Length: 180
Length: 396
Image (cartoon, rainbow over all chains, first blue to last red; front, side):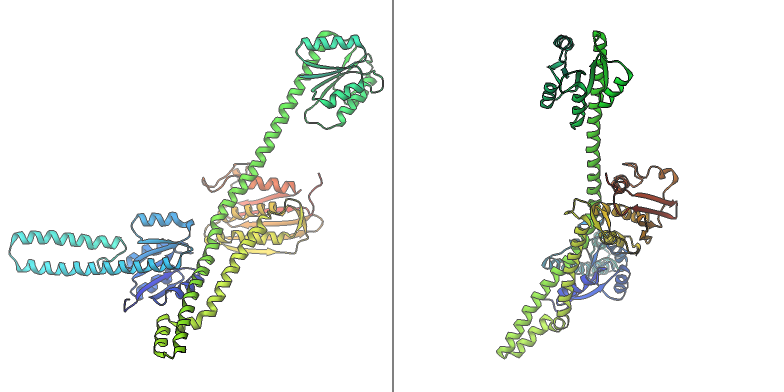
């Protein structure tokens, strides 16, 4: 069991849903809730969020729209959408464009929902760890290049650095961690 | 084609029969009116040629009897008579005869008159057939429209029901989990192991449970009530159990129909203003009237942009009946489209959003109730549809 809880944000325009999910998730996660996209964005500006789960059908801002904005504010957050079948089209498009980690249908199975959020947190951890590893490797390579006058090492180092930058950038699109 | 001839004069009868058979008709011949009537009842004849003067049941009486029973398909009747005065003609036609042939008849005249009769019978048959097809098509159209609007609703209703089901299910899982944890902590207390009890309470966040248990149960019940209400509204709306005319308070009908489209209203952030004045009971087919409201409401919602306004109003018109208005501040109807509003399959909605049947079916339903639909509309500022219904449908 993890000692610190992952901060997650759940967004739904129905307060009953949020209340119900608070009951389910309060023990395992550090739970933030919002009843609209705007409120969610404010919360993300003030708090680090590891997993963002939103309803699709909300007045004013839809879930997919919120996730798109969230990507700018908090690119490291893993993005999940939960929705009724009627909204699947918009969600499938968003997933296909690589903007969403996964989707859950309403009504949800509580066990599955918790499992999906855990998975989201694991994904966050995994990508974070990878990012830290890559950043350390980048630092290390930069230092190596300063020390060495060797052309072959310079060349290999440049090539590696380019690949590291590429992987870091690509992770942003997947809902994982990106360049800060 | 089957022809029945009735003549008590054997010479004339045989002559008729032989001509007709030669021309390809199927002939049944009767010696008198009574026998002809018996034959007529036992088979289907499209053409009857009968002598006027016969004992007991004469030609006029035979024709009157034929006209008196209602059978599908027209029977063409020709009176064969020596009488040729105008009064005779009037009397015969009034009894229901279509044509006359004077005795002694001319062979060619008989032939052409028979052909004319045949043409009439054929025309009548094809008309009846076309009518039948029309009626079937119309019934199918009404059904299609109903299914189409129900289909549009189904997605919205599924969403309305899904939400409460989602949190009711979730709440029950939470209650079960937390109650079990609370009981485990209680067991630890009973054993006197207060350290373990405290750990269990801490782990399961029993404080939250204690504070929110009642609320969770209340919310769960509310959710179930919501599902119950949605289902009740659907049933009220569809009135599936009612196939007949029935007295109904149309304010209730409007209310349940509004509930049905609630989801569409919310999804488009539309403001709904509903003004219902007391209405006398209206003898109507409530399920069909609901279908009309549904159509008008859906059109109004679809005509509006996000955040638009839809208003419904009901009022009694003393001495006339009742009026229901559905008004929107949407796009309005262009004058060019105005005259085609009630035309089947006429639609300005994108493919897949409208069948073009809603208003034409609504028009038919309201007309069957003896009412009318009026439209005021201005492009850019919205439309008002007004349904006027009498308290009783016209007796047919």
